Length: 210
Image 1 (cartoon, helix red, strand yellow):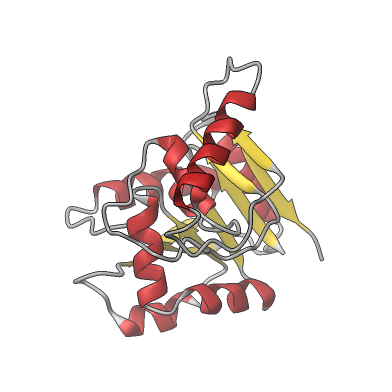
Image 2: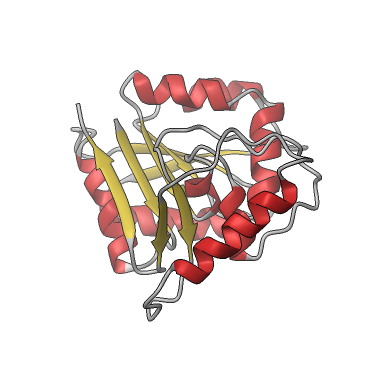
């Protein structure tokens, strides 16, 4: 398994986590595909992310959109790449379209077959069992997503953009628990998670195993 979960890909430790995972791919210049969390018609976020990967020594060269610009052939081609980048953005919207395009299981299979997944902010939360923690980042469920279940690639929830000076995560965890109880009756949530990782912008998690 090769995973990176980061708050900010442009931070030193965010890049270090991504670099760790890409090195595990075992190729000189890993090829990376990019799944946009929402349309990026000017490719502003895509080009900025390309620059980050160039610094690491990787080639981000395929843009995949899930909404009006969806291209099935690009998705098929994407699974030939060494790594796939799940971008940041609106977590609820991103998960809704990944579900609609039936990509969650396909991404799990890709990971199991040796591919690497790199999630930034929203993309990282989608690697966890559910995206309940997105409320703590200020995301709102404007798309009225009913099933918050995500990929369950790790056994914990992930909260990006946490203040690095925070000394006690209890308040954030209590807020998540309160939100869970508030929506429990109206959303399909897989289970309440015991472990929550609070990740400042200059931090990241790399998971590399056999």
